[in-house]
Image (tube, rainbow, N blue to C red; front, side, top):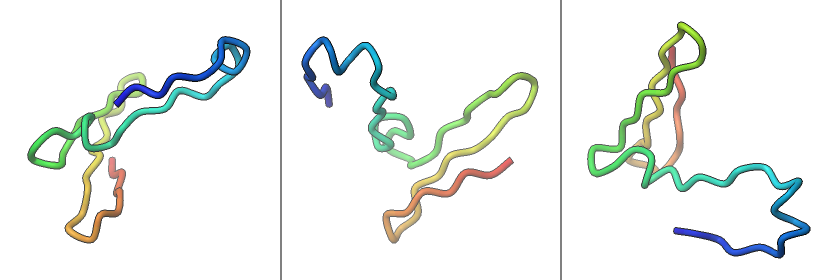
Length: 52
């Protein structure tokens, strides 16, 4: 899903990511920050959980 915004808004906007696209069909994604690995999970209730 791509959200189009005016150019003036895009310059200072916080990036927007769709969690279902990040996690795919299984609802899980790994996110690396430096040397740490995190897991992003979508629960059955439709909530997000980020764990180390």
